Image 1 (spheres, rainbow, N blue to C red):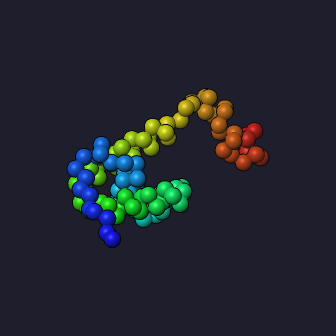
Image 2: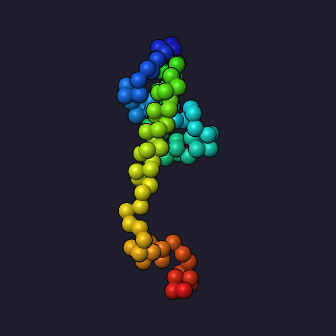
Image 3: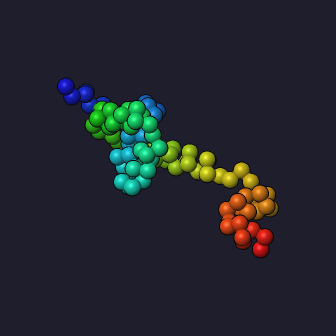
Length: 102
């Protein structure tokens, strides 16, 4: 039996699974695959069900979901330290051991 189609008029009505489903449907396949790789089998199933439930998604809803994703990604990507603290604390861990003292 097919699931009833769901029209999504407003982004704030979306569950996390629906947001993830929209991203998976509209992101590049390689990026979407990487995103799904980080989810559990249960979460992937929830995303699949959410995809099946959605029939029509307004362009502004898609834009809102993608914008939220980019904003959240930006917020977690901001380095907690910069400048001298970063150079002294983090940079040595990022280069080969034989090059650290140079």
